[in-house]
Length: 156
Image (tube, rainbow, N blue to C red; front, side, top):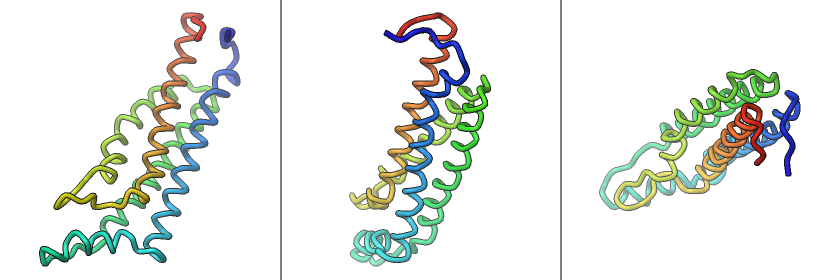
């Protein structure tokens, strides 16, 4: 049975590790995109698989830029939320919830968008970002639970 949370550090101890793990997942996602762009080339290969049969070809530059943008924005935004959380700011929960809501379509789109029946972005390039998003969901839920417990004294 858990006791009622009483201090700022007890409150942030539950949420901080989840946000840190999410930041690490975003960093891994950025590294995977860079490795793919400069070494592996799976996105370029995928675009050829999709568009060569129909006589078109899409340059992967814009997709790489979008994937880098997702990673950089995610790291900046979740770092800010982590800072608010560590400082015990009450606004941390609102910011984390807002960030999660705004990032949902942006992060999930590369994992689900298809053309001619094939996913455009290889799942390996979007998997770390989806993992970071899931950690964001877990962090927001943990944040909500600690806030609820502090207000009501409920035991989870």
